[in-house]
Image 1 (spheres, rainbow over the protein chains, first blue to last red):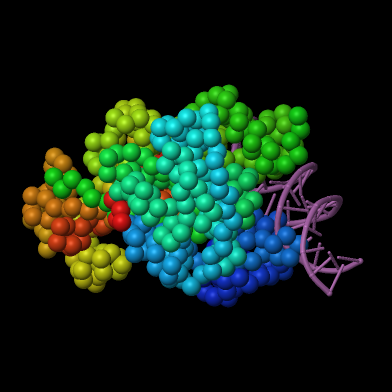
Image 2 (image 1 turned 180 degrees about the vertical axis):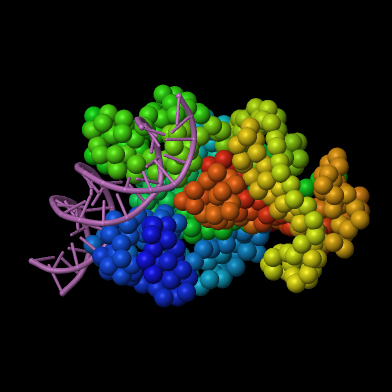
Length: 253
Length: 253
DNA sequence: GAGTGGTCTAGACCACAGA
DNA sequence: CTGTGGTCTAGACCACTCG
C-alpha cells in the first residue's frame, strides 16, 4: 500500500506498534528505511513520526534512533493513594512509591529539601509570607525503571515543619502526610486543580520530553479538619505516562 | 530579529498573542506575510503555527485564515457543592471561582436519547447485558457561544430508567441526578477516571479539533449509598478548553 | 567516519472560501 | 478568480552517537 498522507503513515506505524511488531523499548526502522518501504519522502515520515512522538508513543535517542516508549501508563488513584495503608505498604515513603510497588518498578528519586520562598499564589493559599523563606520546599524528581515519570514540589509552612522530620531528607515511613498527622495537622481533604499544557524547557529536560508533548499540571492542597491549608504540592506528570482517578462525595439531592 | 528555528517563531507569535497584539477571535497575518516579516520560509512558519494549533491557541478556517481561539479555558469543578462551604477562604480557590462566575455564555446542545447497547466495559460497571439494548443512552453535544466545548454520553440501566423522565428528551428540573434520587437511586459518590488522548475522527469533527490536539476522556461513575453503579457518563473535553478541579476526603490517620 | 534524526529552504500542487 | 492554509517532494546541512 502507498499511504497518501503523513497521517496515514502515522496510523500505519501506530497500528504496527499496537500489533506488537515493534515491542516496547525497541528501535523503529530508520526514517530512510520507512520512507523507501512506504514509498514516500523522508520528510513525510518525519512528520508522521512527530505525531507519534507528541503522543508519547515514541521517543528519540539522538544519534541512535527512534524507540518505542518503554513504560505503559500508570494509574494514579487519588481516592486510595493517600490512605495510610497504601502509603505504608512495603515500608515505602509516600503515595507514588506505593503505586509502583504493585508494578514491581524500581523507584529512584533526586531530592532537594530546604527553606525557600513560595510562589505568590501558593503563599496566598498557605497564608504565609511570599517575600521570605517562609516554607520548607521539597523538590523531588522521580524515575521508575530509570524512566523519568514525575516532578513533585511540596510547600509546607516553616511554622509547622521546622525542627521536624518534614524538613529532613528522609521524612520516614508513610511520608510527609504521616508526620503532619502526628504533629496535629492531619489532612482530611485534598483539593486538586489540574490542567494540561506543554512542559517548560526545564520540565521537558528532566522528563525527557519535548515541548510539543503535554504534561498534567496538578496543584494539590491539603486541608485540615479545621480548614487550614497545611501543604501545597505541585505535580508535573507527562500525560502519556499517567491515567488519573478521583472519587468524591456529592450532595444526593 | 531573525528567529533561527520554528520553535522560536512559535514563541514569538505566542508572545505576541499574550501581549494582545492579536486579540481572541481575530485573524493572524497570512503565512506568507509572517514568513517575509520574520525572514524565514513559509514552511517554517507553517511548522510553527502547527505547534500553536496543537496547543489549541489557534484555529484554522479553511480558505479564510488562521484565527486566535475565541474562548479562554473554563473551570470544571467536580465538587462545586462540596466546595461551596469553603468558598470564602482566600487564595487561588477564590480567584479561580471568580473566573467561573464570568461565564454568561449561551449554551446550546444537540441531544440524542434512546435505548441502546452499552460498551462492554461500561456494561460491566453497571452490571447489565452488553449484547442487548439494556441501557438508555443520552448523547449530548454542547456548544458555548457557538463554540463546541463538550460531548457527554450517559448510560442508565433501563431497569431504572424505563417509563421515567430519564428516558425522555427533557428530564426536568435538576436533571438526571434529581430523578435518580426521587426514584430511590440517589448518587452519593462520583468516581472519575481520566486520561488524555488524541480525539477520534468523529470527536474531532464535532469539537472542531484536529487529531493532533488532545482531549480529556473522563469516565464518571455514579455510586449509590448501597454501592450500586446507577449511571456512567463519558465526557470528552478539549484539553485547551477546560481546567479541572476535584476535592475529596482522605484517611487522616 | 558512518549513520541517526532535526531542521531549513525551495518550489510545487491541492482544496477551500469568498468576492 | 484570487488568496488561504495543507501537503508533498527534493536536496541540503547540522549535531549527535558509536564503532
